[in-house]
Length: 86
Image (cartoon, rainbow, N blue to C red; front, side, top):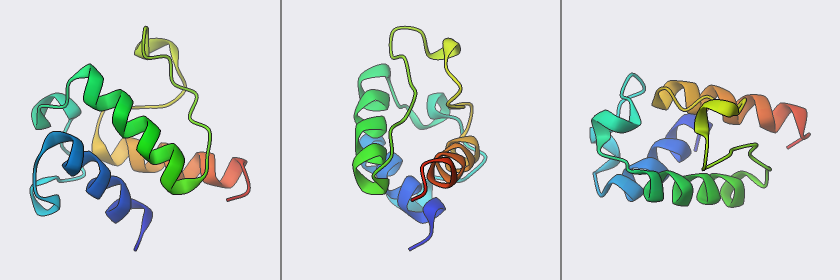
């Protein structure tokens, strides 16, 4: 399963949607992902990919982990995987 498929599955689970309803261009807001679900998704991403995500839940704008869209999250995960040798 690709990084995108895995990230979509995680986000879909947190948004209580089917994976086919989550598209790369969607924003988390569009999908109804609230701050608690976002934190859960970040934890799930860290666990699934064995990476450490630099995310500040208290101030998401102050992080290098781009959560502006599903595609941005996938790109950020791929970048972290490469940086962390995963």
